[in-house]
Image (cartoon, rainbow, N blue to C red):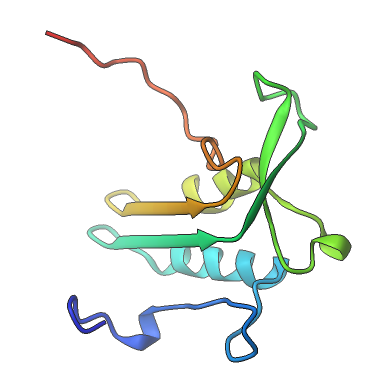
Length: 125
């Protein structure tokens, strides 16, 4: 906020510290949906998740290794996990053209957590 002059109302913090909204399934999904819905061409979004990650048996046969990567919200025992398929549908598909998103996922099994398409169009000279 001090360096880049972001206002506090443009920052959402979910943390299980007793001071902030808790990182429950509903709160995580609502925060992700809100930032995508509010973004427009030319905006930059930074998402940072530090928490538990896991892998689950792929339920729609779209994973080469047979597993979906997933985030583990605070209430996972009651509400379940947030699968990579869900993250793609919530964060990537509806993102407005021209929005630059950086997502830092500090958790286990985060390598393909956003289910982004892989392009092999690199050329080496």
